[in-house]
Length: 487
Ligand SMILES: [Zn+2]
Image 1 (cartoon, helix red, strand yellow):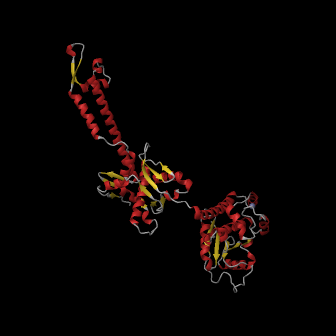
Image 2: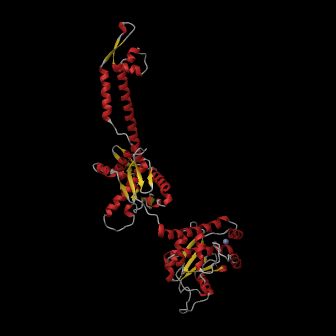
């Protein structure tokens, strides 16, 4: 069961409370749950009149009243966030024995640069206050003794004023003295590691927000280009970064997402509205409807040699001619002499049958041998091409989850599509990760079986390939899929 952290504030501070809660909830793990306070039947603190603030203990008294009223467990941490001015200039306080913590919501913007991001330093203080209370329990004196009077960028630096906490939050360090202190109080390394990962999570989000204001990664245009002297005849160029090498099926699948993105943008036309990513998303079960597009793309990338039926016919007619011309095979006596076709004579030589050397060296026989060998070579190549074509069709059929039986498209469940997307993302992340750009380009799972790339990226087909394929397949019959009954 999770330990509860109850976050409370007056109604006027609810918006900030919500933001702080979101930061805390981003910490992985279930050791703590974060809950908002319940509706109160009276104001959290009875503020008398303006300028008349309760003493520090006034906060804690009110918090204890709330604990009773709401039946909080003694193990629950109760956090009160307030934008009211706290007497004595305190901005963070802990009542150790009761697990009550208050934090000031005001004047963090010098540290966070602007009010819009001050939920991070506030959440940071919630987290380390809970950490300190969790480890030191009732022993407030021991906790105070453990604080560093001279700042060293450790979470236990005693910062008398807010101006000093930026070192602490930007390093988010637990110094080795403090690690020893904490482990003496509770020797479980996993617990301290959990708290540390929470500190790091908040620090990193905070720092990212600050940096992203100035140097957020910007997507670069991506182009489909012809490749020269490469294993693949096409490849993708990321402007200013370089070329990513994807194999035929992965390039096909990735281009499919890029092409969908472009048609989505086109559908928006010149209107500037950004309707979110909804229309840009691809439903996995719809991929089969674009079977021809995927197949044609794949064929372009996978087959470099074109079918050449004419060449085979030409070779065949040469061989046919040799089947009509005759030659005499010499025997030991003229009686045993035999007339055969040049074709038959050549076959004997090819099959290594005993043949007179005169025949073997006869220029016409030699030509026939050459012609037969060439024809065989072409036919073998054609056979390989046929097999490759079948294999390509099978690859795309798996990718589209469609099987073609008796000219009908039938659903065909398999894992190739998911596997393909995972591999593409891995490749993109290796290629673009250093720039932090992969988030724009990766095929993202947006839930409910829908996937897509970021609409912020710009894709251009500088080869015209997609357009020519689209024109070609427009003439094909539309695909009608026969779904399995369970669908
Ligand atoms: Zn320390």
